[in-house]
Every structure is written in C-alpha cells, then in structure tokens.
Length: 222
Image 1 (tube, one colour):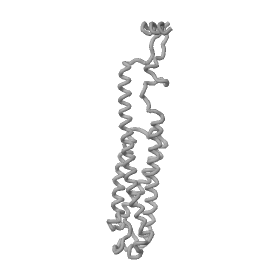
Image 2 (spheres, one colour):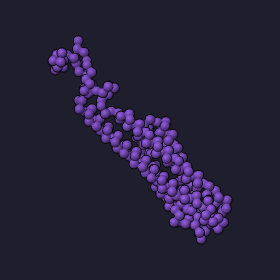
Image 3 (spheres, rainbow, N blue to C red):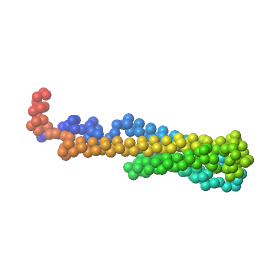
Image 4 (cartoon, rainbow, N blue to C red):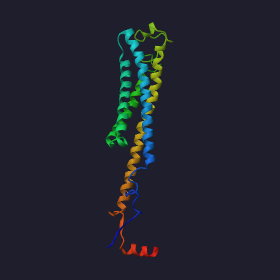
C-alpha cells in the first residue's frame, strides 16, 4: 500500500500554509503599542478633567452657573475618559481587538475625539479670553476675574487643560493612524495568503510514497 508523506515544502511545522498567521513577536508588539497609547490617552484626559472640574466648581459657586463653553469642555473631556476606559476593557476582553467592524469603529471615534480635543484647545486657549480659558487681567469672565486676580491658582488651571488637549489630540490621531496602518498590513498579508493558497491547486501538502517521481527521487537519495 502506498503511504502518504508530509511534504514540508508546502506546509509549516504547525500544519498550516505559510503566511496564515502573523509572527507572535509582531502581534505582541502591536498589542503593547496599543495599550501604551490608550494608557497615555486615559491619563491625559483624566488629569485634564480633574483640573477643569476644579475650576468649573469654583465658577459655579461664585457665579451660580456655567457657560456653554465650560459645559462643552467638561462634556468632551468626560466623554474621552469614558471612551478610553471602554476601549481598554474591550481590548483586554477580546483577542486581536475584536472584529474588523469594531476596529473600524475605534478608528472613527479616535478621529472624532482628535477633532473634539482641537475644539477643547480652542475653547481653553488663553488668547480667546473666554470663560473656559485662563483668567486674564481687565477681562470679566462671568464675574470670576473681578473676584480673583490673574495670579490665582484656580485661574491658571485651564492652562493644564489647554496643554493636555493638544497632547490628547496628537494621541488620538496617532492611535487612529496606528490602527489604520495595522489593518492595511493585515489586508496585504491576507492577500498574499490567498495567492499562495491558489498556487497549491487544491493540494493538501501530502504526496503518495508510491508516486513514480517521488519513488525515483527517494531511491536516488538512498
């Protein structure tokens, strides 16, 4: 009876066609980079939220209300913190960051939050002299500057939110580009796998021991 011998030229040691899976060190590197970016995003948004919340709380105590720009800044930064926590939880709970649809959603939301933090940077810019920015002399910000001078610590807190908004913009933009490049590389790899599988013409990587070419080659080796 003819036997069937594993043809190692068309199979890997795992029994799968070459190129069907990314190298372990590459996948691990992507995962570490993703987690590092998310941790930095969380820290940046969380510190920004704390700083602006302290400032906003004092404005509400003094004036009795918050302006629309204050509410917008607070809402955007709080939403960014919540979004980053959800993404980190999903990334830890799902292998390979979940489905393709989920990764596309992450890219879309990262782009949106990059734009949102640009808005936060504009609203908290010291050049706008608005209620969301640092206090400036001779400017009435909802009655706040009239009671606290320019050098007051609470007046300077929006500086932190302004700087961190720029940092968060860069982090979300980098994360979106990172995932976009990762998906592009995965697509290219899948295309190479399909082309290689097409070259096998349906062969399963095994040959018959009794095949004439195989028998002659085996005899010559002996």
